[in-house]
Length: 167
Image 1 (cartoon, rainbow, N blue to C red):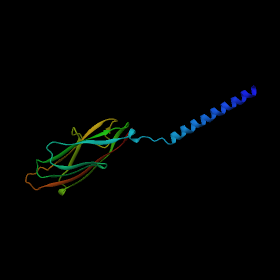
Image 2: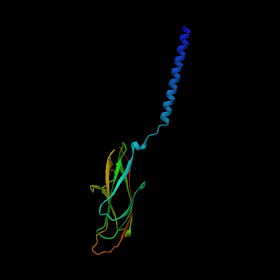
Image 3: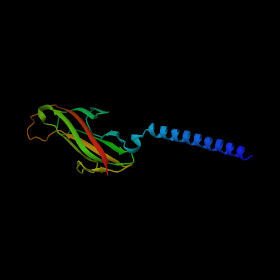
Image 4: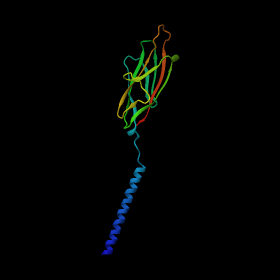
């Protein structure tokens, strides 16, 4: 009887050891093959592009590489203005690390003014908190002149804001 209990006890211990090894292997496999959802931590999107009423017609697109605009202005009363939202959908705050602008215009006359919606300056180091949205405003004006020197002015504009995590 003692011998039978000893064999039964040994089999029970072996079975528990085997089950423990299987659970350990499954746990290690799960850790090694686990993927971290980067968007959960870090996800900045730009959306809701709206052209301001009164703007001339232009070609405006939102691409993976940023926002691209092609527009022609003919006189001092004409302008082109649009706004767009930058949203931090992640769980980390984001800091602006770079503000890229590639502007080509007739005789380098036209310039783009880029600000927040309230006309405050956008600066490197500005923080967009997790789940926060900020609205960016871009405006191009035909230059004021006493004597009309320029006729139609063309502007090609590419714009992108880059971010990194803010700790």
